[in-house]
Amino acid sequence: MTYEGFRLKVSKYWRKGLAKERQKKLLGKDFTIISNNCWGGMIYESYNLPKNSPTVGLFFFAEDYIRFLKDLKGFVTAPLKFITPEDSKWKTRPELVNDKRFGHYPIGQLSTGGTIEIFFLHYHSEREAQEKWERRCNRINWNRLIVKFNDQNGATQETLDEFLLMPYDKIFFTCKEWERMTSDCFVISQPSSYKTITASHEPFGKSRYVDITEKINSLYK
Image (cartoon, rainbow, N blue to C red; front, top):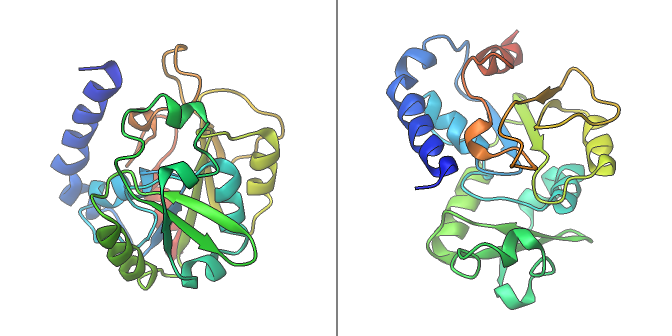
């Protein structure tokens, strides 16, 4: 087992094992987290709550994610289509070329004038991905929304700058310093061999970096 795999197993144990106790500290339970990777789903698990977000068990490349956020309502109401791995515009990215899982999960496509791709990493079929995407899009609470981004999958200074200007309750995780960082940005310590933040290092609940419970509760104040 890899170091990251071990950390993910331990993280899952603590997320689910203390979820009910963590849930008691929430002021409300109907919030939506939009995330560029699986972090949102992990947060719902860490409070033992239904997944009120379509961005669960999947990931975006940074450029597409920023496009997605710029027209969030448009994209979540657009028809979801599927493409083959060979047709993905990101197929030559090292994150995919070096990942043996690529080609074994559905790849979705949404268009609203511009086109973005969604990598349904933890889904077994296009049917499953479509059913859960559409069901969870209908659960979005537009009045209690947290939007999360991180430094994975091609994030650049430009995509970070665009993200930080967006009119959402925001949070950004990274393993290094960037220019023009704000109070919404959190630098998380991890081994230097990892050049972008890993899933196992992204915080949940209350950590020494950020109190996610308090971030959620701020939506209800």
